[in-house]
Length: 170
Length: 387
Image 1 (tube, each protein chain N blue to C red):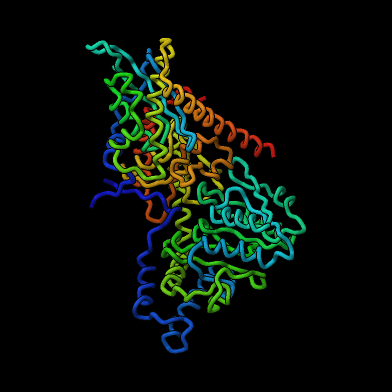
Image 2: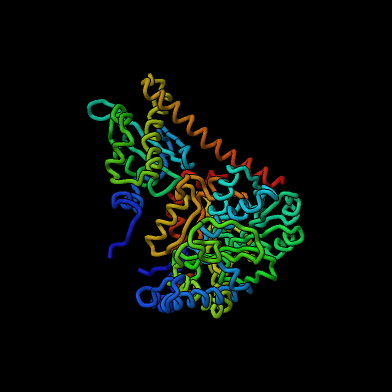
């Protein structure tokens, strides 16, 4: 008999054997994002080099994620999709692209999958800012949204700490 | 692959002897307990014998036992039934912040109907403060509802003392005994309990049947109005096979509860000891004043849903209070109430034992878990910079 599984074969494959786990010490760009819905956190590191045509591409990519099965699996999928892509292509990679690869995801868990594309865009944003490049308008807007989410996650954690202190005072 | 079921707090397998007791009441002795003919009487006899068995187990009278569909139903019946029957007397109810959702959600609904609820906090071990309970009692308090043992962390509240306080103040006391019933002794008189709720599937009985104990003379309104079954407190044709199954399961607990509690306490403590050898692992709830079958941990740097799924792929079946696993995306209110931070509750794992759990199961779990935790930590961005 087949063992029942919560998730698709593809998701379980990446969850069991994630690719590109870790950090890049001298990364060219780092994206740190938080999920305001459930408190997951992801960090993405990219190395940027030029390809034969002289275009800047993501030559290496690594991630670390604190989150559930979906969050871990899509993080890993994203790194495979993004590797060797030009920066222009990378910022166009969306959550939809990742979900196509992931297969069916339960509706309540869709939010767990949005982290990865955000982290990629943030890492490119970080690279462009560090190198004093012009930031595309879309990417700038996205950066502001993601940062406000991250603040919210950090605030949630803080609120809970304060709640705890209040209880202990009583 | 070895299969180790460690989720007995979620549900238990039906004991084959219970199944056997139930079987005649489906197709053979299928009469309606309200029918006046021989087949009706036969069903009614089984019903009343079941009532007696359940009553005896907790030192109650048979007419103080009401059968129903689940513990959730029982709890809703008690909270709403007492509230509506006594609203002229008062509109204040006291409960704790670590109750099961059945209690908390029913209380939230009652708040919308104009009732006032006090949610008592708990300390880091999970216990309410008795002085705080007594101080919370007002002239218009009509009900105190505090659980016996917690469903997540297994800690056992001081029910006897709570019952005494309620009795001194002449306030109705209900306790949710879903997790404790059949695992540790309950005596409704010694413990001053006026009402309690149970569910058969938590102690090797069938799903879809529960019961309420209501002390004689308690002023309560029914939830379901109709043909007047169960002393007019729960109209619905009685689920005779289910009720017979519940009563048979109770009968078996009577014999097995004590030796099993001794055996499981040993296994529980071995499991706790083994798991806590994992670096940055923590036990939730008081280490000793807890159910013989409950363990609950949290592991720094990782998330519980991934932990449960990964353990499942190794054949060990547990559960978690992580936000990622809940429909509301909120982490467990119990773990938050005992002072865990959001990320800490995120990494929780409940392993609950039962009568088919043996030493080899515990050994296997202790062998597998550290590897699983280690693998997930390797993916986590927190390790090393958590604090």
